[in-house]
Every structure is written in structure tokens, then in C-alpha cells.
Amino acid sequence: QRGTCIGIFDQSFGLVRDPNHSNNYLIKFCFLNMQTQQQTHQPQLLSANQPIPTYLVDMMQNYDQTVQQQIDSTDYFIEDPDDDDDDDDDRI
Image (cartoon, rainbow, N blue to C red; front, side):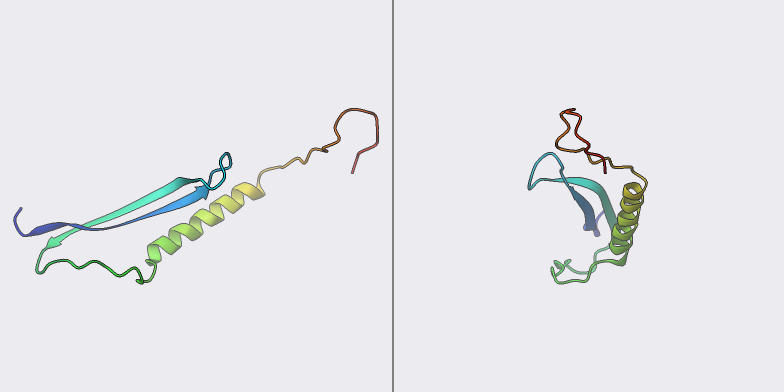
């Protein structure tokens, strides 16, 4: 369609540290919001100093709570580094 601008969008994604590689991150979630509207003037680039959209803050907080619940529900076992079965009493 003439006069329609489809290039207005914002994309947000969350990263988590890759446990297998240092200084490497994996995309955990991605959110893309596209809006179509009548073009009345040339769109301008948004400044990088714009505040973080509230939906992104909500998504990040929800993700953090979900991850924390998973961590809290997981049993972690710490193994003794001196586990050579030499009959020493290494119990805690």
C-alpha cells in the first residue's frame, strides 16, 4: 500500500550466560512488536537514551522470578573433591 510505513518496530531480547563457554551468551527469549500506521512524515530514529519500555521490564522481572523458582526447586549436591574412597571420614 502506498503511504504505509511498516518499518516502525521495537525488538527486545533477554540473554543468559552460556555455561559452556566464557564470555558467550545465549538468547533466552525474544519479543518483537511491529506497528503499521499511516505515514504522515519521515520517521525519525529514536534516541538511545529513551527509557526502557514497561513491557520489557515486566518480562525481565517475570523471567527472573521464574528462574529463581527453578533454582529454588532444584537440589544441588556438592561433591567432596577428595572423593577417592580412601575410607577417611569426609562427612559433613
